[in-house]
Amino acid sequence: MIAFNHQRYIAQALDSILMQKVNFDYEIVVGEDYSTDDTRNIILDYQRRYPDRFKLLLHSENLGASQNQIQTLRACKGDYIAMLEGDDYWIDPFKLQKQVDYLEANPGFVITCHSNYNLLPNKKLELSKRIISNDELSIVDLSKGTFISTLSVVFRNHIILEFPHWFYNSPVGDYPLFMLLARYGDIKYFSEPMGVYRIHTGGVWSNTNLLTNISRWIILLDNLLTEDFEDDVKRNLIDQRLLNINELLIHYVKFSFWEEFSNLLNKYSKDYPNLKDDWLFLKLPEVISGKGENAYSTIKECFNQALINIKQFIRR
Image (cartoon, rainbow, N blue to C red; front, top):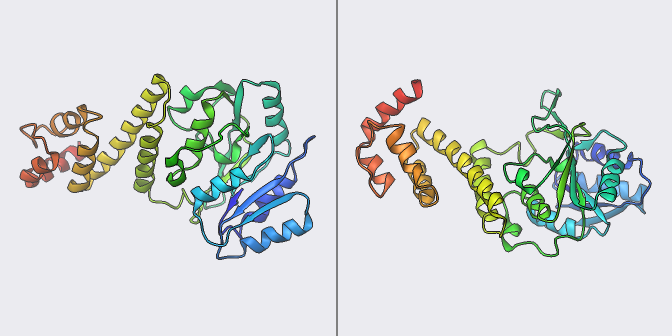
């Protein structure tokens, strides 16, 4: 568990771990990232009540989510690791037992995960859209886009001996971890929801601007594409990156953010030669008459006409 400023939620998260009914020993490893609220005191109180259950990493300064996650993972010594952030919680007391039993019985699998509920700010529970049927999946499936909620995962420990250099500053920590693990075996997905993901203004991901999240995801995919994955996995990552690039381009066109639009277009036009065609010449043929090398210069030359045509394009 990594925790930062989770005083309102951390007790429920820890109680949901302590309620687990299992036939094996486990420890709760918490990386407390120098919270400015009462999170640390609450965790220390749980350690006093359950001294043999907790291992605490109490950082003397704020490391950030990525560094905190890496240090906390390295402190885990068990055969398996389950992940739960300090503002989420589990609802099935047999969750850990089910997942560990499956990994024990199926040595070809490295990750188990399950569906979950989202707890909305209005306190309503909704089933996550990530839900799929009970299935046995592979890294090829995962490379098409994540279906694993961090709170749902249990995976084999001692597989990744060293993280790639880019992982230490990754804008997203869970998906690349799961991709690196999935190199070594398959993924079991349980369709029953066994946990709750809390959507609130203090959440690291849910409180971040959508465009920032998309930009972070593109950086993450760029990092993953430096790894030596199989060709079919790389193709899926490339396709996934293109979808996210398109999302940003759509936004920039709608709001006439021309410099951002052109910077993104030029950055990825070598990887996707059809981007210029798709965005400048096919969708807006009246705007651009020639295929200039620099998209921004071309757009700037006919900015006024472009603005008129794009407004018409949006209405259509």
